[in-house]
Amino acid sequence: MQYSELAGLYEKLEATSKRLEKTKILADFLKECSAKDVDKIILMVQGLVFPKFEENKIGIASKLVVKALNTATGISSPDIEKSWKKTGDLGLTAEELMKRKRQHTLFSESLSVDKVYKNIRKLAEIEGTGSTDVKMKTISELLTSAKPLETRYIVRLLLEDLRVGLGEGTLRDAIALAYFERKEKKDIDIQNAQGLFGKASELSEIRDKIQQAYDVTNDYAAVAGILMDKGIDYLKKLQLDVFKPVKVMLAQKVKDIDEGFEKVGKPAALEYKYDGFRMLIGKEKDKITIHTRRLENVTKQFPDVVSLIKENVKTESCIIDCEAVGFDAKTKKYVPFQNISQRIKRKYDIDKMSKELPVELNVFDIIYYEGKSMIDEKFENRRKILEKIIKQKELKIRLAEQLITDNKDKAQRFYEKSLNAGNEGIMLKTLNAPYKPGSRVGFMVKLKPVMETLDLVIVAAEWGEGKRAGWLTSFTVACYDEDTDEFLEIGKFGTGIKEKEEEGTSFEELTKLLKPFIISEKGREVIIKPKIVVEIKFEEIQKSPSYSSGYALRFPRLVRIREDRRPDESSALSQIQGMYKEQ
Ligand code: ATP
Image 1: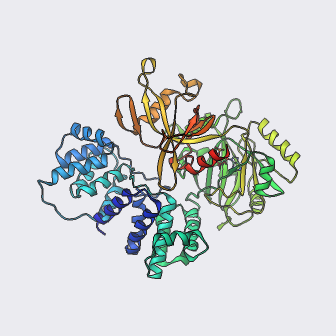
Image 2 (image 1 turned 120 degrees about the vertical axis):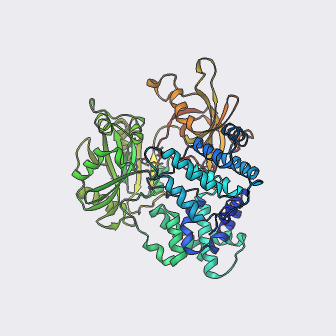
Image 3 (image 1 turned 90 degrees about the vertical axis):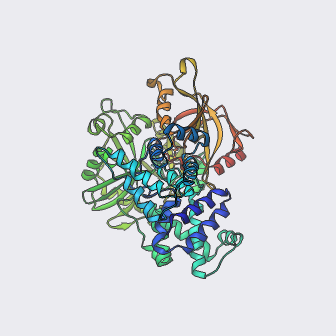
């Protein structure tokens, strides 16, 4: 397939913000694709060339792209940067520059999707001395053989910022519609399709099967590839893979024990809600992999956990779900979540770090056991397997503290006991429910005392003045619109941040974290790529025309940085609408 066709698709998707239109545009495109191209196309419409869970990352800095543009066009880097400041988008800048240049050169052979895909993937493998130069040349070569519109999207792919606004739900629906239309040899009006999705129909069944296959693989490319090539029955063959991450099951919130029982049924399993870092650990014989709930592979950072599993989990193969809680090696006291999150980012001194900040694993679920998926097994049976295979040792590995009860008083006492032990609260779980990857279905709920907070992504900031010059001091935060894959602003915060690092999250720390993601600057204001998620406390949600979400927060302040959250996992607009109504 020619890359120009894909660029045309990107342009159409970018041109509309309506979810239904996007669904139809993508479905029309997919149903004409040859089966062998489908997986590549699906990755690339998500702005990826590697599935999210792969360790390989493109890792290209904007500066290198500027250099490559300079080589490809002959236009000086400062001029390129000037134009980039104006557009706020290096992709658009690249397109403009290429248009200018094209007037002088004759157009050569056309670029294939395959070539773009392979070349960008290749960049991740170039290492060693002189690698920056080789990368730069690879990029400039690619840009030289591209048409202006194509360069817009090559640059955005390189920078992992495609900006065509395609949410996961839209992608899933488009795949379902493409498959259905192709199979039925029909062109379905999108309003009709929406109607079919909304009720029990063959189309909604296809959509649900795609979702299920995605939940266990985290890979729309693989799912769509198999679907379009072999058909819907083959999706069942996509099974859990011990070494690939699954989307973990999430919990809804309840306000008290009564509501908890109401949601999960009686009797229920109550468990301590530990305040640590969620880990999904796969084991097959002596090979162990550890993923976070963001699907990052963190095996290298936790050699201590690998040994723990080898020594204390007695089975050939399994995937277990647990919370790793950090504790101080000297005092044996649990430490706040923040401290252990340092270990996630660590690339050096890993052994030293694992001695200073060891973790205790609190295991609460198992989703794969002895070569078989356990997700359809009842929770109580899954727990029994855990009891059988885990050799418990304090401060090493334990099963989550559990109480099975239908009694409100006992439940209340268990809740208080958990809080007194320093935990965040409790979980209540349905005894006979399956494991539902990736969803907040209500098979487990959480109960904790603190007031409501939101997880929001930082999208802009302002440089401070006087004593705080050199630091970013005021931060604009946004929620996530799942329909359009956009981040919508909801407020600004500047409190809850400390002057000194010892006291908590400091201005310096936030500035350091955000600086690499600055897209453009105007006076004191900077626009920031949505990457860093923070937890924000507030008094109230108000309607407001000042922010693109239509809402504003009263007295927002920082609680903590959420290293464990992907930007698209920040609080959804729909959740905020719900909270506003409840108030
Ligand atoms: P929060 O911000 O409240 O921690 P979250 O949004 O990160 O929640 P939720 O799914 O809403 O995630 O809450 C459940 C989280 O609690 C799990 O992701 C897991 O990390 C943690 N947890 C601690 N103890 C348990 C337990 N016994 N069972 C399940 N999850 C637990």
